[in-house]
Length: 270
Ligand SMILES: Nc1ncnc2c1ncn2[C@@H]1O[C@H](COP(=O)(O)OP(=O)(O)OP(=O)(O)O)[C@@H](O)[C@H]1O
Ligand SMILES: [Mg+2]
Image (cartoon, rainbow, N blue to C red; front, top):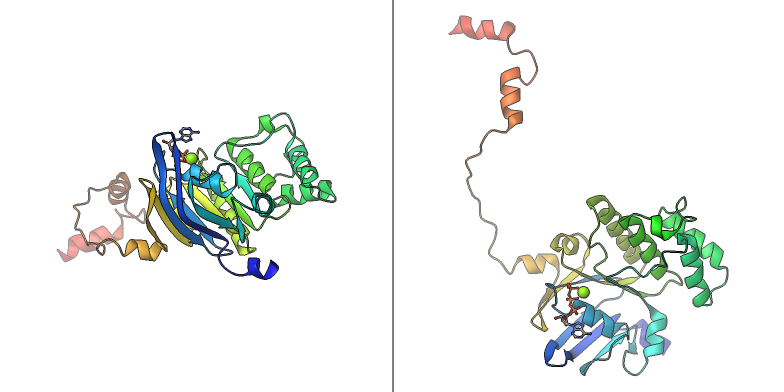
């Protein structure tokens, strides 16, 4: 079993199908995610990203097809899958009434880890939340909440993590912080599957990008491969209006000495 797990992709999805009553959401989804890589699943609202993540994290059963995570089949070995993953959902799962530190300790206890306090303190430090650790999560900003949510999913160092829209609703600074965190995870060998609607997020983070559309993966490749699907960039000539800065610098002089000796030299030579 150990040998089996050490080989092959971290996630393998083949022919996955899922309907909610008449609504066919997944119509045969196939993809693989290499170990230690970041894989972005892109798609519009309602494309089925969360549905796919729920199936991979054993919260939902597929109608057809197979999926394995860390070498375990999601349908027949769900307990093993759950031990190998963490899921940070689209909507934060932190307990507002507890402090950030208490949330982390709680998860470490639930995972039967030794020294939950030390684990909590290490994660708070890693996510720059040491000072806020003792405060109730209800007082956290959106970015802090997202960070504590991701920190909670790292308790116990799962080899595979699912992040469902990790930066939705965050300001640019907080998004960059989350991106940094995700990169560090992958650098430590964790496999990350993230869903996003932000194309720049996928560009920034992902080793591979797949687009889920009308129930199927319509493209899957590296950023460079995806860019090759379109004709090469065209050079366009644009008439550029002066900016206020151009006007200002022309009037004042870029060096601030416009109406000095140089002007007289120009006049004399003319
Ligand atoms: N429990 C459910 N019962 C019925 N329909 C559902 C259920 N869950 C999801 N759906 C529908 O399935 C489709 C896919 O939903 P899903 O949440 O997987 O999309 P998504 O790609 O995550 O979208 P978003 O970007 O908005 O999060 C949507 O049309 C949604 O309304
Ligand atoms: Mg979703």
